[in-house]
Length: 427
Image 1 (spheres, rainbow, N blue to C red):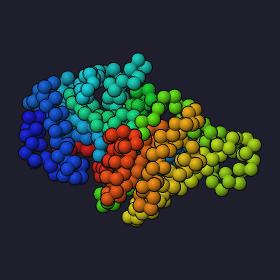
Image 2 (image 1 turned 30 degrees about the horizontal axis):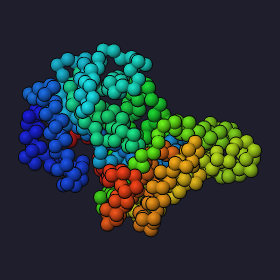
Image 3 (image 1 turned 90 degrees about the horizontal axis):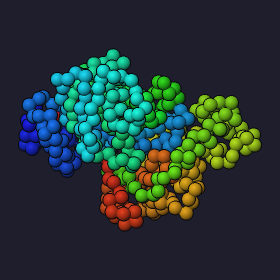
Image 4 (image 1 turned 120 degrees about the vertical axis):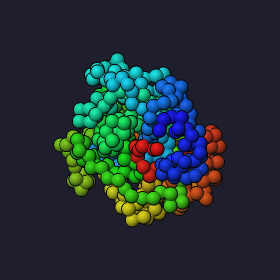
C-alpha cells in the first residue's frame, strides 16, 4: 500500500477498525483521521507517493504510582495514554541514510555509516534516531535507511514523555520495516533508554520508554537496574467510567533542577547513613528501628522522604493488586494516598525557593473539594511545578474541567484515556 492508497483507505472508513484498536472510541478515531491524512500527504510531498509505506504509533505515558522511587531502585506503576507519535515510513534506496521529517521541525538526516555518539549533537532529535539504529544493530537486528514523516501530539513539558514516544516510534519503524515486527517491546524500550543516555546526552531512566513501548498499565521493579522486572497489568480502563485528567497549572519551571536532585540525594543520604547506596537495599523495619540514630546523621526532611519511598513501593504493589482484582475504588484510594504522601513526606508539590507560589497545591486542594469520596488526585511527575493527575468520574468531568480551566486558564485540563496498546503498526 502506497501513501496515496493509504489516504483513500482512511477517507473511506476502511481503516476505522485498525484505528479504534488504538484510540478506543469512535469520536477519537474521527479526530485522528485528519492527522494521519496530513502526515501521509506530507510524505508524498517530500518523498513521493509510489512506494509501499507502513503506519506506526507510539504513545506518551503517565506515571500512576511510584513518585520519586525509580532513582532509588524502587517500584513504579505507569500507563500509556491516547496522545502519541505517529509515522508514515518506507524503506529507502539509500541503505545508509535515514531521513525523518517531524511536523514543525527541520528534516533530520542521519548517516548510519557513522556509529559513534557525538557530544555536539546532544539534545538533537537526530541523535535519538542514530542511537536507536546503532543500539538495535548491536542487539543483532537489521537496520537500514528509511524515509519517514512523523507528528507528535504528546505535549512537551507536560511530564507525558514526548521524547520517549519519539524514540520508541523510531524503534517500531526499524522493527516493522526491516525485522518483520519481531523486535520485542522491552528491547525497543531499553534501546530507547540507551539512545537517550548515550547519544542524546540525557541521563533518563527506563520508566518512560517502557510504558510507551509496552502499553496499557505496566509496573516496573528497578531492584536490578540492569534487568528490571517489567509486568503488563491487565485492566480495561474504559470500563471504569472515569477519565484521566492531567492539569497543567502553568507554574514556573525555571531553576527546579536542584529541587529534583535534592529528593534523590536526601534519600541516598539516609541509605549511606545505614551503610548502603540506595534505599531499596534496606529493609523497611530496619529503617524504622534506626530512625532514632538517623536523626543525628541526616536532616528531618530526608527521613520523611525515605518514609515516602518505602511506603510508595508498598502502594505500587497494592495498586497493581487492585487493578488485577478489578477493584477500581480501592485503586483510587491508593492513588490519593500516594498524592498525600508526596505532599506531606516527599514535599515535592512546591519549591521552598518560592514558597508563596503553590499552584500544584491549589490544584490538589480544589480537586479534593470536588472529587473526595469519588475520584483520586495526586502530583504528576517530578513535581514542584507543572502538572497534577486526577481520575474523574465521567458524570463529574464537565464540572471538574470547567473549574480547572477557570483557575489555571482555558485548555489547562487535558482529558486522556489509558491506551490499550503500546508501540504498534497501525495499518
